[in-house]
Length: 110
Length: 112
Image (tube, rainbow over all chains, first blue to last red; front, side, top):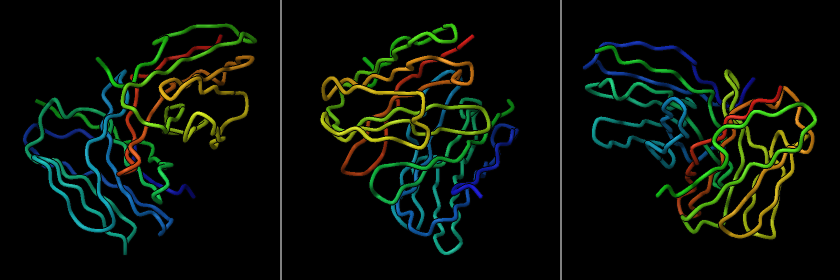
């Protein structure tokens, strides 16, 4: 079993829809949770960062962490074609070595 | 200018050749990393360095070596390239205050 599981997709949704992306993990010691966005032929860029449980909102993006269920989510509201990318979840114990999910490829259809 | 740069961006080489991928950063971070990315496998850590005198193996270091020439420079070498090392390679740095990592644009390496 992988430490971090992420549905690879692909996921296609119409423009304006709410997108939900998820990861599950097995190691309860993870404390820091991140979402990266990767456009085709580019490096991953940090999108959201959360410490421990709870929600964090930044514009159209909301990150949720449920440590009791070992489950993290990223919600995108009012999705735009420019949101089409691969989304990677990542987590760490705090020593800065990140463990990544395999990524979910998202396409927003105009 | 980009904070993390990688050269070359694309490279095609033959089996058995020695290859060096270079990474430079202007973020002033001490910590640097090399990853490879393969379809369906995600990002896997090859080597990491917490300062100039500190080098550590990641989960897939066999067949690779690294050199930390300065705080800002971290190179990855393939001593004798083989086809299954064909992949996207990323360099990253990290911010020790919050533990997040910042990636370069990647090098697409093809070994024939």
